[in-house]
Image (cartoon, rainbow, N blue to C red; front, side, top):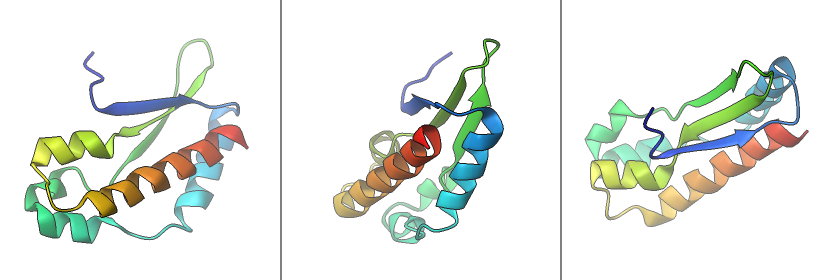
Length: 101
């Protein structure tokens, strides 16, 4: 499996606790995708940004999402570094909150 461009974190919670906290946190975050799509319309293929909560056979819960830097390179975005940094920071905070609480 090619995991290039995917960031994955291990959650300290069970699946339902991780998913619930992720949903609560996402509901309180701004939408940053529109300015990015103005920079590269093909980014619409990857937006809205998705976060996957998945549990392996050993019961370990993971949180995975596309690395904004990977999306930048994939779509040839060269004029939106500030927005991409905000997206990366928001995703990191959202997923860390869901994994650690």
